Length: 162
Image (cartoon, rainbow, N blue to C red; front, side):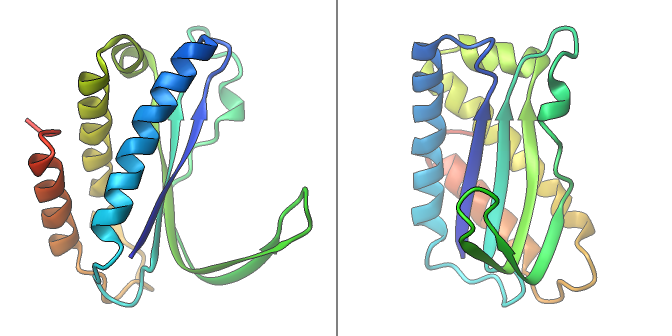
């Protein structure tokens, strides 16, 4: 299964060095999960699993409208064009949603050690798998229990879950 994580930071609240550090933590975890899942098969329905990650801080709710929450969505097949380049992009058996680290989670993530930040991120990602409890009817053969068990094993093997 193909796994990816898109990342957006609130650059207003983060200093440049902090963004680089926090981006590196996300990239490292994303790469580890991708390697872990690349040869796994949980059924034919979901072939691409995408999490859009927002690490944002809006104390007064300012600019929050720019960071749209993506509710879980499944796309069996769709071709769209990139608005900037005009290149076609094909979605095939694509499942995506967003996870937002804001408020207290934002503070804990950005102010903790690298190890603690990675643990917090892993915990929030693992919690996000609860969205798999209400999959659309189109998704008939995705083995949710095995996926969750594998991801829990992965996070525990890397000492990322308590």
